Length: 271
Image 1 (cartoon, rainbow, N blue to C red):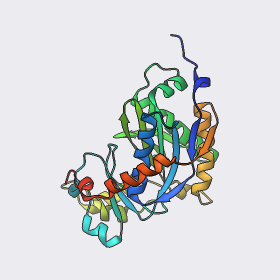
Image 2: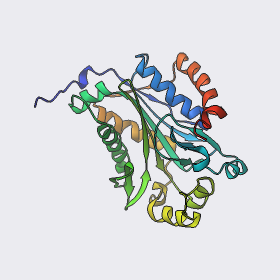
Image 3: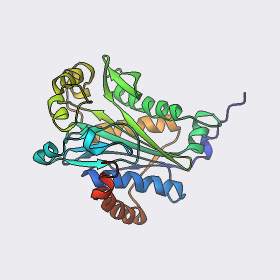
């Protein structure tokens, strides 16, 4: 089979400066980037971000009331926002994780991988290789595995999960890189599955989930990770990235989409 090697024809990718935002803003930016790439108004884009305040995100079709303890969430001053991607409920704890999003056209990934029609698993693999390469430069050797979706593990414990949305042959994948984890806080705002005690879920998280900060001598900052991740993505793509920012059109869409993500109508779409 002839292998395509067309990366030289790719337009430059964009790398956005890392940022910290509230829940509706983070999800609005991701959707605005997806729209821009679909419409051909922006290149493939990578960004890293954090959350303030702590925010629970739920999958596009999940029931809000079954997944989240809204009373506890309100007591803690946390937010909740529904994603456009699938997957399960996640607590994005302030200062305890780095979140990434990658928006890219299927045709461009086909050029990079030399595959006519890259699969969803190809997207996962492409991005996870970049994360693993990044962490390798920080002296952490990680493994790939699967819990529902493909995920990354450190010493047998999961530290990175992800979710996808695909529209008109453009992928949005966003995911977490846990720096630390507090299972007690996690399952004070997330509801355990029906019939499972909260204490059992806390024990399960302690046994199966970790943060990369627990395994490092020095603190991992958003800026440090961003610099290394950019280099790793450039290596995977085979071309340098351009440091960029949101276009004026994207900024306008973020303002519009933020109202959607902050609305009760959207969050209670599946009550």
